[in-house]
Image (cartoon, rainbow, N blue to C red; front, side, top):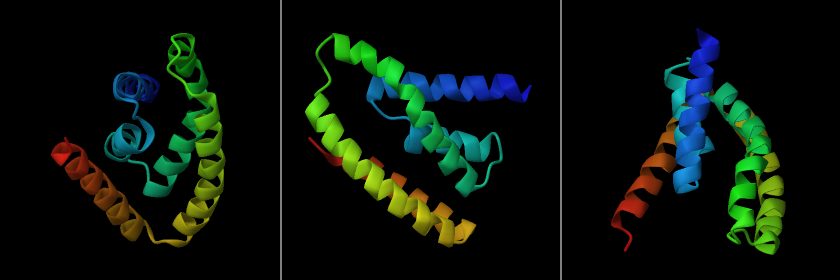
Length: 117
């Protein structure tokens, strides 16, 4: 049954990622926390592992001319450096603090998107 649940979670993350360009932090992590009862550290690590698989849906956008490779590469470079630093910091934080920080980031993002023009 857990295999089916994981596939459904992946489908939802992929669907919303394909529609809205989001997935890991905003969709997959909450689902892994709530449905799979993962720890915050496990959900974040698993979410980062899934990023590699996003190459294939990106090709759909690339074929239509919607991917700026230069910007993606530059942001990707920053992402690698930032995620390495962030992963090391997250590893030092207690689970309850990390979970609360994650919730604040999601809440801030939701409010910012909601009130933007």
